[in-house]
Length: 74
Image (cartoon, rainbow, N blue to C red; front, side, top):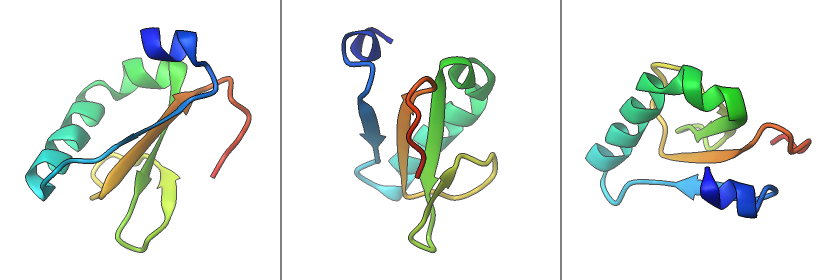
C-alpha cells in the first residue's frame, strides 16, 4: 500500500523463483482476494501466454497488480 501511495501509476510484477513459490503467491492472493480487490486490479499470466484478470483456481506463472484507479487494462 505504501509503495502504491507514493507511485500510484505503478504496475507490480510478482513471480516465484520456483513453481512452488509461485503457487504460494497464488494461494496468498486467493485467500486475500476480497480485501486486495477493493483497491487493486490483479492479473495472472496463464500458460496460454496471456494476461487475464485473476481467476480463483487458475494456474498462473506470474501476477501483475495495479491500483484500481489506473484506467489502463491489458
